[in-house]
Length: 259
Length: 259
Image (cartoon, rainbow over the protein chains, first blue to last red):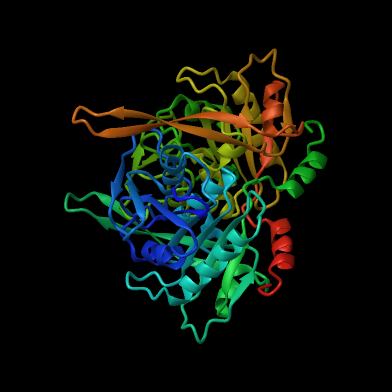
């Protein structure tokens, strides 16, 4: 590790060969010493999965010119854990995850491998950001996304940040000219209305593909979904304490025998 | 579905053949119409993973006498989604997940397949509870756990509960005589300090097993870890909005140009 340069750990959930992680590396390589530890295959929808029942592989690879890179057989959360323990042997200054090909706003933070990697770093006390572009295509244009990444990473590195700061950042599909800037938001209350597409295999047995329709039930104006609709990149700070304190107080009244 | 009886959806992450889910079924079968939809194999550490890249299998099985049961090739979250869409065709009255063989208190709520199933149901607006026993053994004694399950499920069914109520319940290892009762708590601030056990395979290539030491950094007296240490079952209400509102307000001050 070179001295004095901030260490930037980069990972993702689309796998180390995806265009999104390449855009992320390019966006911040002037800001510090970049180390990539990313899954060797796509891990979308892995949520905060970790690998405990099978062993993990970790291999040095050449993917980004001049950038130390490793691929791992595990999940995004595994990558962050392994990077910390077996590669960096110390906390990086920041951890950046993405850029995901597809949105991770609102409720999707729960299902997102991109965010789980950032969350894992935040648990370790590393300021971290997950980036997702609403453009899910392989040949997505990351021009706007890269300016957002550079701006936020610079701000995080320039100033002492709270230990557990963790941002969920989504970037709209737009040209640099149409981009409105960034907005600090809250998670929209939304869900997926799932439907399963039932098919029959060549042996006559049923199988199902998950398909779903995104439903935003939140009429608020301060949500990430609303900011994105207006052409802003949404910036949502995420908690790693999931306790519902209001519900706790309500339950203490309701079930006063057990509080 | 029989009329007038509440519908209780049961799932878990240890798989449909684990003793814990059997104990859960036994604990509540007098309270309503029980339907089991659970993974066909262990899914521990799956977090909130969902299956989008491969199709799912769903098969009717005979595991619990007199109880409609299905096994699914997917994750706990997949089971809840499939149950809703392909089996129940309506919301169950409550969803219970577990009883997990092993603790899911404090930060473990993030990694837990048991909790992800309950969380998925809560997103759908179904009051739900994840149950975990600190006794991780196959032949764990679920006597105390079953009384906790019965009591909480009865309370949830007896009264109109808030739509998104979601409880993370952990049960200590103790005899019915030593059991202190239930306590409503908050999530302890804790983490896993990971170490990876490096080994070499017969072909000379390295591989890693995740091993970790649980570290509770929370000195508070109102946490789930503390309640469990004292011999109580911990009851933590969980939010599905992960926005850190305090951090949002802090960022709006700090980065006032983007708020």
